Length: 358
Image (tube, rainbow, N blue to C red; front, side, top):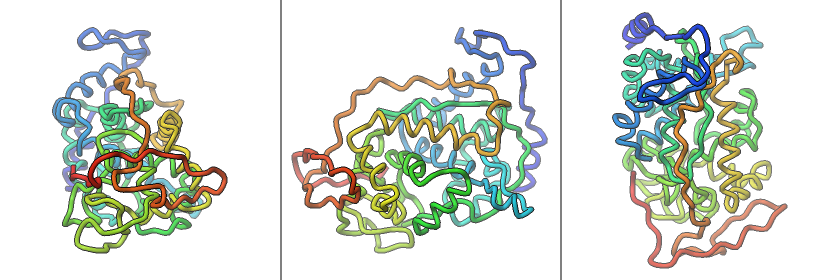
C-alpha cells in the first residue's frame, strides 16, 4: 500500500485558482465566494450520492466524522520541542500512509473508511487532508439536528506519516487523555465539545463480536441523548463481556466506552457534559467551534480558502427534548456536576428501551 500511496501522491494534482472570483458561478449554476471552491460542489454531489447513500446519516457518516479526528489529532508540539517530528495535524497523512497509520492500535477500524474515501479524492484531484475534513463536514449535515461546520480548503497533499501514540484510546485514563489533548491545544471542556460527535457514533472494534453498536439510543440524530445515557448506571455488557476500553451499559444493545463514562463523571468536565442535556443549541455551537480548531491543526487558517458556502445547510429539524429511556428513572442517573442540579427529565413511555445496531 505504501507504493500505492506514493503513486497517488505523485499523480494527484491539486487545482489552485490564481485569483478569487467573487460569487463565482460553479456547476449547475451554484455560486461560491471563491472560484477555488467550485470543485467542491462536484465532490459534494458525488459523495452524497455514492458515499452517504443519497444523503443518509448512516455508518459512512459516523466513520467519516471519526476520521476527521483520527487524521487531525496526529499533532504534538511537545514532540516538536524535543526535536522530533510531531505530526502534520489535519494533513491527510492517515490516507496517504494508510499502510502505516491504520496499523496504529488506536486507529483500528479506520482503514475501511480510508479506502472508501480515497478514490473520491483522487477522482476530483483534491488533497487527502481537504477531502477528509470536507467529507466529515458534509456527512454530519445529513443528521437531524446536525451542525454546519466550517470548511477551509487548500491543504497540501504532501505529508509525512504521523508518529504513533498520538490518538487517545478509549481505555486511557482521564489524566492521560487530558494531557495528550492538552498537548494538541484542547482544554478538558473542549474535549467534551469534541465528544459531541459520539451522539451519532457506534463501535466496531472494541468488541468485534457486535460491530455497529451505538453509543446512544438515537445514533441517527444529532441530539443530546448521548449525554443523558452515559450518566445512567450501567447494568450489563451488550456483547461477549468486558473488553479493554468498555464498561457495562445501561440499555440493551448500547455500548459504553470507558473514556466516555469517566469524562462524564470527572469534576473537570461533568458540568460541561451535563449542560448539553438541556441546551442543544449550545451543544451544536460549541461543536462547530471546536471543530474549527481540530480541522486546522498543523495549518495557518489564513493560508487556506474558506469554502464553507459549499457545505449544505442542515434541515431545520425541531428535535424533542432529551428524555430518560423507557424503563429508567432519575434514580438511575449518576449525576456528577456539583454546581448545577441534574435537570428534571421526562421518561419515555412504553417497554424498556433497547437499541438496534447501525
